[in-house]
Image (cartoon, rainbow, N blue to C red; front, side):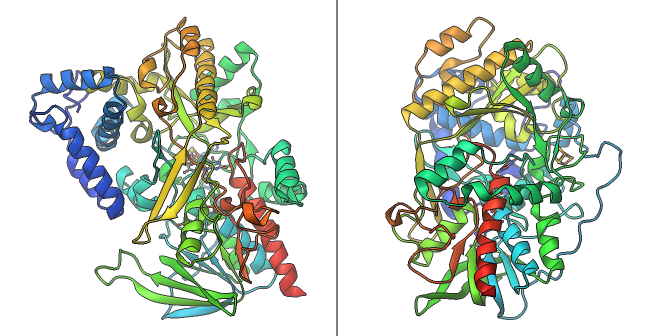
Length: 616
Ligand SMILES: Cc1cc2nc3c(=O)[nH]c(=O)nc-3n(C[C@H](O)[C@H](O)[C@H](O)COP(=O)(O)OP(=O)(O)OC[C@H]3O[C@@H](n4cnc5c(N)ncnc54)[C@H](O)[C@@H]3O)c2cc1C
Ligand code: SF4
């Protein structure tokens, strides 16, 4: 889809795009792959009676331009899918990066490397299984924090993680390889709906904290009020000591404007110019100064993900961590959870590379597989009742990019750097976020040559993420073959709020000097100064928004009302003894801010209760 322009090579002719993408897609589940194949086949035959791949460069360009200007939603969805994959394969080519000028090098302000984190011990699962006091499924924000708390309370803790272990000595070097290996389904977990929304989550030791942006917020007081008053989370306002401890341990530090990079500074200047409140973001990456590549794993581990923080701490207190162990079914005897049937090893089992592995837990079992993995396991085990998997909130989000005259080189700065909370009453939070080209390139305007020109101009692009605390809901379930499915319905009211948030991000960009803004709504095209009033006067349907989401939560929520949630106030799953949840699934509703710190605080609270009851 990139015929080549002055300054950038042609896709396929000069740069192999389809080969790496085909290899990349080899790591997604058969279900996702089937859907992608169908979509790509439809795209190939759209110029019927011709096939897209048989058209010459001119005819392709013309066809893509027509697709872009089409009023059919299907055309836009297929075009976006084709753009996503072609950009993914093209933009990670080292020569393409070099021509655009992208240079990624993680470093600390003083040029040193962060100290080594401590060991995780032997992570290969031994024999056919093992015993422990407390088994924890999942090693992300919730699982790791709970493991450290329980091991330090003297319990024998075993953490089971489906993904592999990576750190600064072993992150995959290639960008596509990193996405394929570190993310569940190569990052292609998608909630079906109108619009479909990609919701990537990680699958590795340390969970999503290893590839996240390191932004640290406490849940706002109003959210905690709601959770206490409307959902019966009596301890919602007692989390401060957990927040304090986690912030100290993870060395959470507010960025100083100097280190934000130009992407964050422009958002700060634009917000100040229109009098919108906000501030530099606090992060768990100490004094890192580079480089907007957090979603590939931080190559120096400056970011204190769980693999270099709570997990080594848990292991130092006696916990065991097992990598490549997927919990398949919870074992229940006499209404009590007594362990977990797992598969150990990597691969899909067809080649015999995975073996049965059984864990017996004497005191408690904690499910902390994240808002997808937790309901998936509960549903497969027939536990959790009718509410399990429901109430999925995701913080639907989109990037609002803008082109500036000046050089931005957004990769020379911290990925997520400045927040604007002026429009909290609309449930909108803006965050200056510069994503790597492989993730953000498809959102750049144009097709064919025009899209390549946009990519060549990437150094002049700045970007603000718009995030909504959603009242819309989705649902996570399983297919007949046990695989994950997710759906989400964006309400008209939430769509309106998102369009409002996009307008505010555009306003900030223009106030900071942007020449044009990309609102990520096909019908709206490119906005220039003066276009904002017209944009705001237009009503967009939910299906017209191009969204992503990074914060799934709520799928095994706490509720005082038995009929409205899965867990009681202790985080215990109703209807069975000895089974707890300790991850983002517990949240009664959308957290409003990036959730990692609140997940940690919730997990510590649940773990403290388990430790107390075990000691009684
Ligand atoms: C790109 C991106 C950027 C983000 N940036 C931020 C940010 O800057 N700040 C912030 O606060 N939040 C951020 N988040 C969200 C944040 O990382 C998550 O909300 C948080 O990690 C959720 O914690 P968790 O414990 O619920 O799940 P996770 O951290 O996702 O951990 C779940 C773990 O359980 C494992 N698992 C699942 N099922 C099984 C099973 N059956 N058997 C064994 N293991 C299993 C998974 O492999 C995974 O490792 C970001 C998310 C993404 C995707
Ligand atoms: S921006 Fe992210 S990847 Fe780069 S050094 Fe900082 S934490 Fe690491």
